[in-house]
Length: 223
Image (spheres, rainbow, N blue to C red):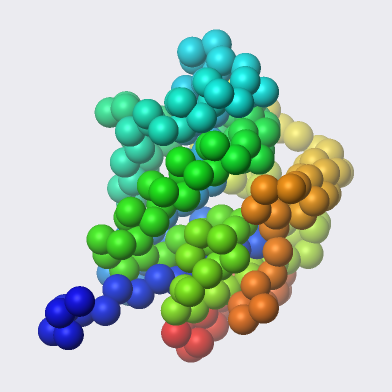
């Protein structure tokens, strides 16, 4: 590499659902002028395509084919699948459930990781997900494990669904959301492929009692 070329920087933010990863990663990318990569949205996009094509989530071969063929483009706050803006369409409960199911398929993960690494090789990035610092970019310049109290995570997830504007979004009791997040945590942490783990060199940030700005400043202080 040319020594005069600016160094590409990778900031990896991992953590459980509802911890605020997307919000923090997006804000960090804006502050730093980096590319923001929402890996969860990428899996959701593939799940959405599978639903539209009538492909079963347990059809490993077809799901891998869809993941490899999916043309996914990321822009600030938006995601396009095969040229269509699907930013709202991927936020439904059905798509969310599908994304969780296909995320454990080795072929799908290989395809997604390949796409994510390609983006990271082109520019400095802030990438969030559940295995960024452990699998996708184990040599990240900074690894953050963002977490929060389960009740606070449930509140944030409910607010996220309401703000999504999805036409089929319906109010869900907080206790139901807490239970669903607990189920998701168990699933993500125990899956055989790329489980949710805290990287040995990751900095754990508990955002329960912190504002978005406070979390951003905390992360920036380490970078």
